Image (cartoon, rainbow, N blue to C red; front, side, top):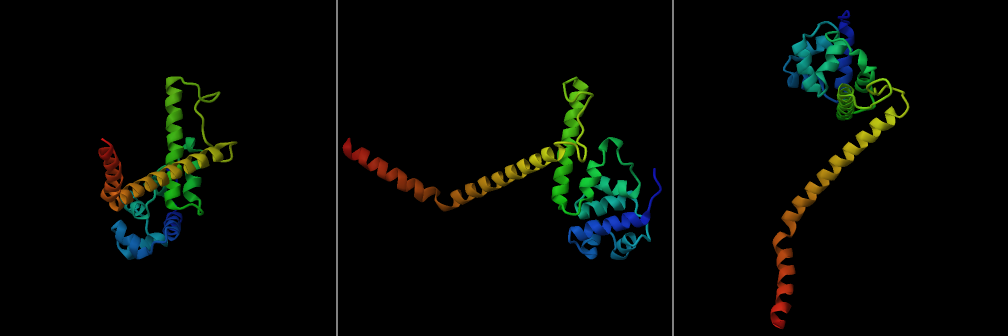
Length: 189
């Protein structure tokens, strides 16, 4: 385990809280810790336990693993290539976007690990790794994120349309369409 830099974990928590636009009081309440204790953590006066970090991560809606790595409780995985850390540290991404990107990245890694175990042809020397700056990696991740967001939007629109259709015209539209079709048929018989 690396030497824990208490200031860096406090600074990291403060940055994440500010990016999420959550007040210290709100985070303390959602994490189940006192406001003064959270303030001491952010100022580097206290070293939070793994349990407290997990509660803070839930309050921030970020990965507890990211806080554990930042605090030195967990070592950053060497196979990560810094992608996960880079995604989590990017100030231009929302927390939801970070989580989606990390999930996509991890799913690619799991898929490639399964391919490597089964002997399926992946890359020349083993499982493919998405590394920051590798040709096509950013485009592939961006494409996957855009596809996931488009799918989520389409599902939300379909659900909204279904609800609107059920409320607005289920009976009157059905009666209006059924009655004219039946009347001319019965008159011609």
